[in-house]
Length: 134
Image 1 (cartoon, rainbow, N blue to C red):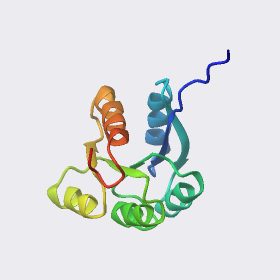
Image 2 (cartoon, rainbow, N blue to C red; image 1 turned 180 degrees about the horizontal axis):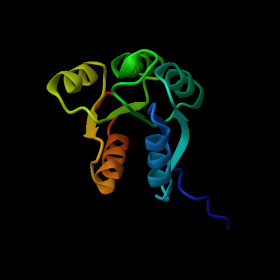
Image 3 (tube, rainbow, N blue to C red; image 1 turned 90 degrees about the vertical axis):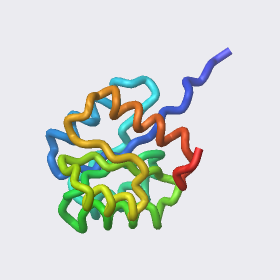
Image 4 (cartoon, rainbow, N blue to C red; image 1 turned 30 degrees about the vertical axis):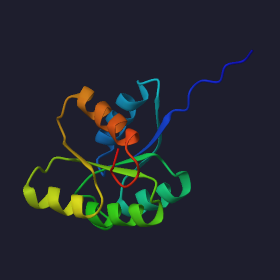
């Protein structure tokens, strides 16, 4: 009897810094249950890739060219409502957090967070319904 491996959590990463994008891809793909389906370098590309690939989670930079993090989050939420949103930013000010939360982001981590926390946040998001409830 052939056993199919369990489905992997499909993640889209959007960050204008290719080093961060590559590091997140390497970290997440080191987990057996997570697959990075794409890395976008600007907001417009992230929205287009989310529509095309329909990931379970989108990890979004807050300050990113092509419309910014809040616009990107709103557009992904509107076009791909099943995708859960997580912000990953160097900025931890209340204004940035509030803007992303109002755009539909339900997890917000600051760059430099421990790797275990990043992975746990993605798994937490996948345990919630797309509107943020358990």
